[in-house]
Figure 1 (cartoon, rainbow, N blue to C red):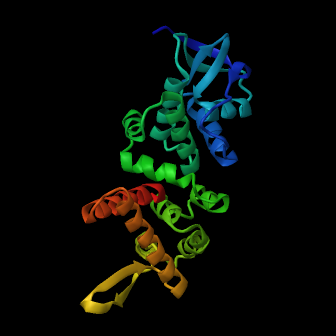
Figure 2: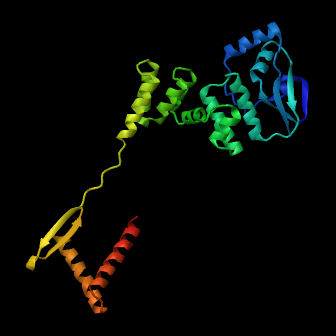
Figure 3: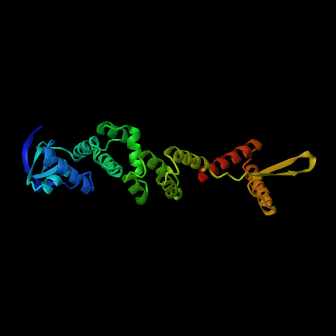
Length: 274
């Protein structure tokens, strides 16, 4: 691995694709005060891509240095080839280590890592130093409506509560979010409500079949079943049954042949209706 360590002009850094989508002015101000008092303690991390210096970690330091009037900043630039996926993992990992990202920023970064590397959520969790459960919760946040996602980023709704809200019915999410923000519901209460919602989602019951039993002379009976019955339907069933009997008789078959014919036709109906 070839690395270059030295002072780099701040204007030369390219931060496109950085995991951080915004920088709080107060955070930049605090960083500037610290760097003014004790200097730059940690170098910026970057890589060289087609002659450009693409930043991996340290954009807030660059913004603070600019605020202080610095033109250059200490950086470590990796000149060795680095895939976009590996670069995304490094960027995400370094920011996670400092708790520098908001939940939605982290979630979007994890999603980007998955897309660039092709790894599973569990594999990504190992690479960025998080549990698989945490990664699953983060990715679920991306399904939240924008207003609720903003509340999660602002810290008004915790990560676990946000995950539970994301699992709720869409029409219930806003109500649950308001309950959490107002302090009327805890994460566990939201989880219980979501669990109850899922229990209520039962499959629609199939309409039960009704049987019609027609008594004939000599103690004989004919039984037919269907979901709905009418006299016309009963007549049609008898006509169809008679047609089948005549078909078997013409071909020289017996009762067993009739049974086999009906069974085979019933199988074909089931396959077509599957």
